[in-house]
Length: 258
Picture (cartoon, rainbow, N blue to C red):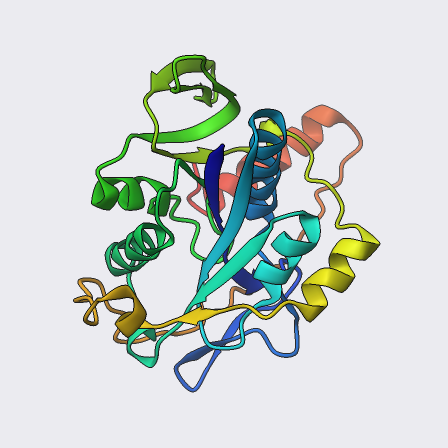
């Protein structure tokens, strides 16, 4: 029976207008939701559990009370959820976050597979799955479009390389990040939503994980909004395509584009 963990992140809605106010990132009143890529990771984890037998635990790293992503994962079908939160973790970089998540995975114990989404829509680095695998000392199978558990207890994935696919096998335990080709995420059921709303999600701090605050290597001393660009549009008209093309060429030369 497989013990599966899926890591999810709470992010602003993709329609939110993100700005910097007084040196802090703000998205106004926009709701916080599960990272869209992580829905595919939850789907992959649930598929594996259904096909091969197992349980799925959703794991998230965030501020106290940031449980929307975890409740969404529970509503989709995850059996348990854990939030890692501590005031000392307020300003983590990827390396520190990987160490904390790895410690939480080890604290869950006897985990066979850890799933991640391809990347988070707020930071877009896509590095955390490989970094967590590095800390755990497990294989990292990233950009996976399909996942198959093998008879010998290993796992085989097809990695999406953009221009083709790469087939890779590895022993378990392993860390796998998935793309949208893994399958359309299921909708949370009504009963799942009700169950998730009542769920008491445990919160683990650094003490529960036996960790001290990890050193942060990358910091952001200043945040600012990008400068506004004034854009004007001019329609070039003419009696023929040749005349329009000549006028356009003259404009480009005058603006020193050519």
